[in-house]
Image (cartoon, rainbow, N blue to C red; front, side, top):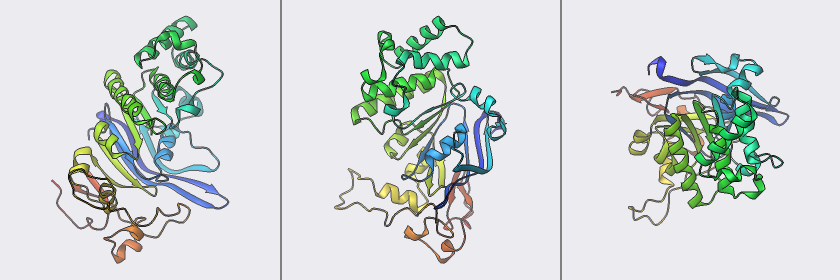
Length: 328
């Protein structure tokens, strides 16, 4: 990938939470890339490290107990881990924005929604109160809410409308990168579809790159260009969406697809992945998936697999492919 097209590059990132009960190894040796205008899906079970990755990019890891031990987070050619808090405050909400998981708790209950959008605009742009108010009303209309409702408070909005307000706040300063942490989890199915269509439309309109955190492979198929499958803090498979859906390689990825009902298959029962995710304070030696893996070999319990490029831009962390030389 050419350097000038990269917007975000994560290199060998390690994030741990150090507690009295033990050290939670939330993100381990993560490496990812995101081009301008591209959408990357982070997929995995609860506790896989998806949200911790997003908070690491935003530099919002709570310390203590959280700590970024090593690695680089290079945004637009500059390492965010070397920025001061003052520099980071100019980036957050302006160049990089995040939509958090629950819209119900993301908004301030004692400020009107118009004031909350205007607050972000005034913080990052050289505008007066009237200009900020005008732009906040325009942003509300952009996400499908009449500007007359800018003086209403969050409790006067439904869950779907609150999520639209959160999206308006996130996009108010036209960020280059938008991180969406399961933005439709708290919404019903019909509203989920509306919110996803809105985000797709706005992403194209503002030419924004996006990291979509989800456990829903349907959303991935609909909106993502690339996908990183996470398991126990590790990226186990990383490729473009077409490759992932037509040719999944890692046993965990295959297990995820086997767990989804297929209308074309005459199956009496689904094939769940046996067992549970390991305790992040006590990850197994070797590959973290080996206790649940149907193709586990003796080496899997002794060593951690390396990242292997099995095809062009298709990476898998699995010993099944380490000695295979079939790149094209």
